Image 1 (tube, rainbow, N blue to C red):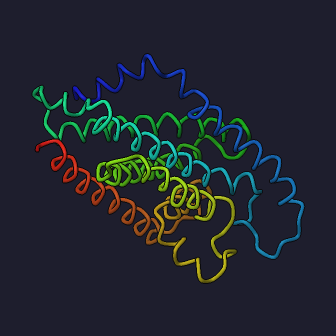
Image 2: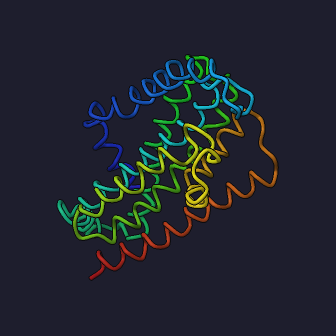
Length: 253
C-alpha cells in the first residue's frame, strides 16, 4: 500500500504531462480512424463484413484494448528501469519495511490504475462519438483492463531483466507497435497473409481485442470468453512470477 501511495503522490505533481497520452490521443485516434476512415470503409463494397456493424463500432473496442496495452507498456518500462538502475528508488524503498513483493504489487496496482484512467477516457469517447452505448463501453472496459494488467506484468518482467534501455526501444519497435497494427485492432486477422496469422493469434493483444469486441457487440460465446480470459490471466501470472524473480535477483544482492 505504501508503494501505491508513493506512485499516487508523484502523479499528483506530474499528471499534466500525461494528459495528451491518457485522454486526448485515444479520442483523436478513434475520431480519425473511426469517423474519417470509417466513412470510406462503410461506403466500400468489400467481401468481408466487419461483424455486420459500422466500422466505428467495430474499431472502438479494439482501440480500447490497444490503448490499455500502450499505457501499460509505457508505465512498466522506463519507470521500472529508472527505479532499478538510474534513480535506484527501488533500492531506497527496500531500506524501509517494504519488501520486494510489496514493491512489485504496488507497482502493478498503480499501472492498473493508470490503465483504468486511459480505459475510462476512451470508453467515454466511445459513447460520445456514437461508437457504442454506455453499457457496451463499460462491458468492453473490463477485458481492456485485463489486457493492461497482462502487459504490465509481462513488460515489468522483461524490463527488470535489462541493464540498458536499448532493449526497451527494441521492444516498442518490434513488439508493441507491430501488435498494435496487426493483432486485429483495425481489421480481421484473416486479412493477413496466411504465414503470419498464427503469430497474430498468439499475441495477447489479439485475445484482448477479440474479447473486448465480442463483449461490446454482444457476440461472445462461453468457450471463446474462457479461452481469451485464460490466456490473458496466464500472461498476468507468468509475468508476475518472472518479475518477482528478477526483482529479487537485482534488489537482494
